[in-house]
Image 1 (cartoon, one colour):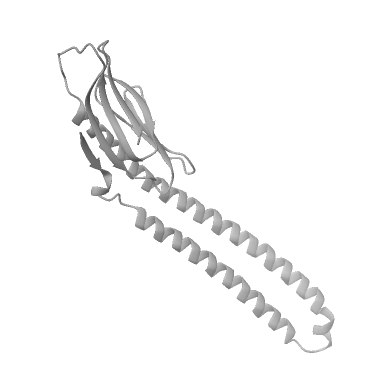
Image 2 (cartoon, rainbow, N blue to C red):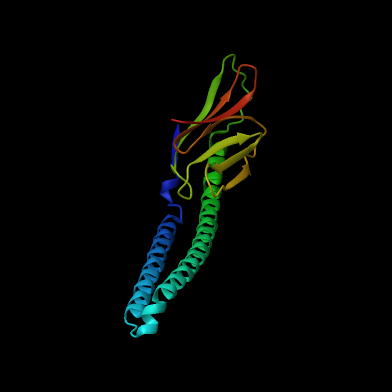
Length: 203
């Protein structure tokens, strides 16, 4: 029985992702303060106008200016939010893809460690190898799932932006089970019928 951990070599990207989220938050605050300052300055300018004509047209000017300011503000805010959301999704997808590749290689390497070719045929189901992995609880700050698809290891995130990847397990065996990260067990079992099975589960 052996144990391996992905945390022995920290996955890159978490720190960068936190910095990116902080940048998005600061930019949002900056734009809000800009529009508040612009609105306040505009009202002050209107209040400082003097003369009969200024007083007569102040209501119309104020209404028109406010309408234009609101429309412009909404357009800019929508554009900025859409751009930042797109950048965040692209960055999260890039980080998630990198982390998925590392997890996939770890699972594949673990299967290679416990797989043992044995000509002896046992009359009962026999566990030939077992390994425990300390997988990350999240990938790209998202929940994820690992499962076998035929002879491939499939890893996918469970929320947007959806990121997924597969890698070949490398052996002509039967594969079953799934895990959502954390403490995970991989078993290699030979049944009394001779069928060789690799299973994965969260423990």
